[in-house]
Length: 140
Image 1 (cartoon, rainbow, N blue to C red):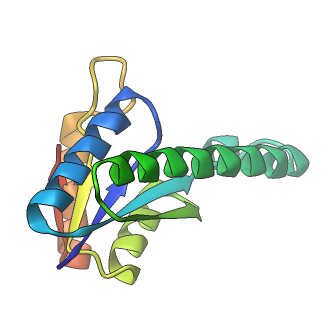
Image 2 (image 1 turned 45 degrees about the vertical axis):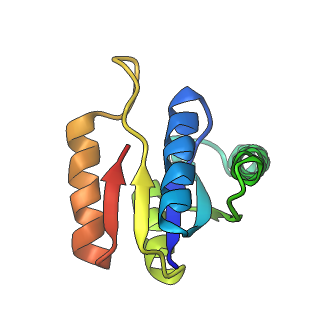
């Protein structure tokens, strides 16, 4: 029995990734770990007190999104844990993959032209995860 790590950030694309991770956990008999990363790098040029306030609010939102993901898994009979980290997304996801002893990382495929993520970049990141952590990464 392994553990699947599924990064989530809310929204329709994340729901599809969560559903795929839940299905994979069922199929493989694995447990599930949902990850939310509070990444505030976009506020690097903003005043310190504002960053703290925004960081706290984003962390609360992340905890709520993780709770929703955990409930979605439980509705389908899958045990899931959650973890919320602060930092840069790429680094924190790779750190979590190594520290949590996961056997698979699930990444959601970019949804449409409006997505800030591009498939080629996500494929490169999946390869980076595998090379640096030894953990398989799939895009769903």
